[in-house]
Length: 236
Image 1 (tube, helix red, strand yellow):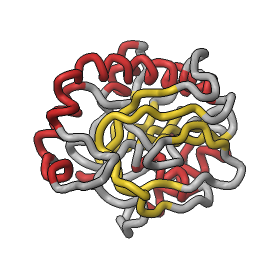
Image 2: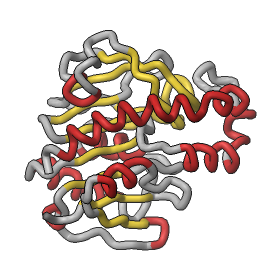
Image 3: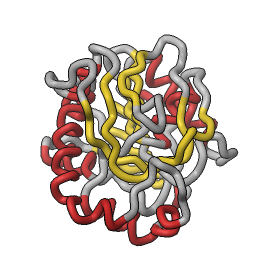
Image 4: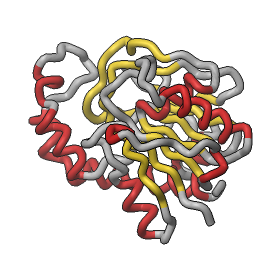
């Protein structure tokens, strides 16, 4: 089988638990380190699936590779090649599919209890994820996406309404970070502590709130990620 493409936009925003999950199941992947100048393949069909990670930039920034990436996303969806987006990756999916990305009503950093809003949520987040089910997931974003025409809104949040949408049965865009592992999250909290301390947003937790229960919260998040990634890889 072809490899899975993983697009990494920033040095400290790597595959995390997504990479661990794939390796444990013998699924090969290639990481494109866009911050090092890696070039994308000319066609989406070069890979069995596409994963787009997060990053500190805006999906609206005029980065030199964004136009090509948006084209690869469109090609992949048109050719039924699975695409999954985490945070910035979900925002780029929204842009590619005709949606918009704009400032979120509130910055979100920390754990949020999100809510399933459509019955298809159970297909992605596990059989217990019925409408109204709460999903404890990690956030770090200041912008959010609209739901593109033809996509299905799956998950909402208190401080940012649009948290996840699906397109067909193979493509998922998420505003949250279900790929975080403990090492990745601790690195963020160390390097970007100023973003927490300098925020008055009701959607921002401080490190002293996040760290004491980090191991437990990561385990709950990864239990949800297991369902997400199992569903997504069924389409490969």
